[in-house]
Length: 117
Image 1 (cartoon, rainbow, N blue to C red):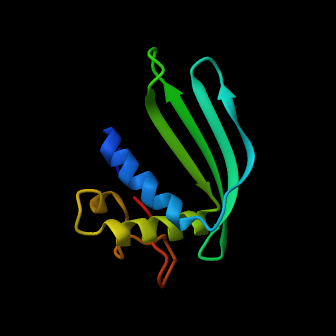
Image 2: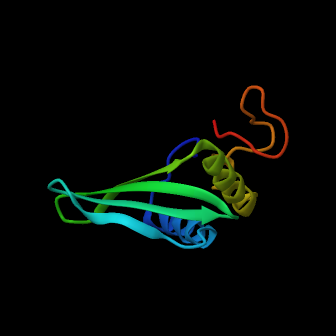
């Protein structure tokens, strides 16, 4: 959903903080340790009435601090809606350029759903 990466605790907090407001609920299928230094979440939700599934992996460094977060959403139609809403919210900020704008569409697609690069 992003065209790039986000670094720094403040940036991650800003993006994840707003992203959480888009979920109507979170129904967890699994949340727990993953390997020696990771944490995994698998949950479903809805965004503006559209079903969305998410898998989140968190990797910690040797000191136990979060070093990397990867969030995967499915299906594609829900991901595109989520990305559009994030982009609209962060438009005009340094984070806004990370999300697809109206000029980014999937081949053969018309209308209001936009693809990320």
